Image 1 (cartoon, rainbow, N blue to C red):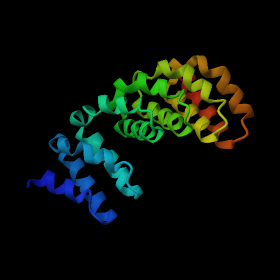
Image 2: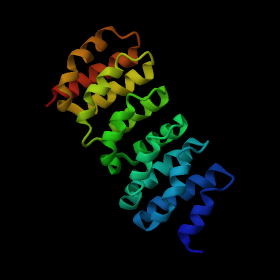
Image 3: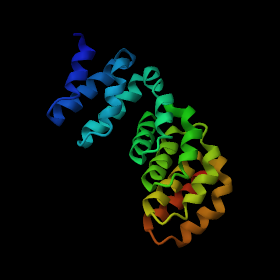
Image 4: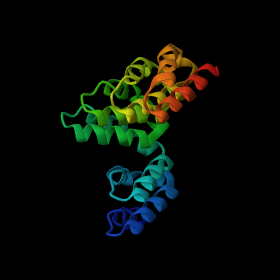
Length: 198
């Protein structure tokens, strides 16, 4: 058993400390830990926040081998099971820019009938960055969602898109002035600043 196999085993360990330390060490190995990607993806749903955090960081540190998981995650994003779709969107968020080719699938997920999927898709689009400008219309529509967390996520993602989200400014301006939630108003105000910065 080599170091990667040993750490994969520890990532399934009983204590959170064992699991998150294993994730940290796998991340430090970079691309060499590529075969640990499936286990790290599972660890994104760990009950412990530190384990989830370090599993996400490890995936980004692994780089290219982790990016190879994107097609499978996109397939899961089309699953008939809401929980599977939600986990896929969350995993794509954790991959960040490595999941750039998932932008179109995540944009489609903004219209999902399950609110948690919509929310995680918006967060993922903010993390992915590149190629997300086509999500502007879908994100703008979410600014009217009843869920304040989702409205916040949509405003934040539009801010990340920046000047290419200029068509969202009228709606963002209305939200910044009138939304019932202070955090959403603040996120919309910040998004307007970022969009206009270009």
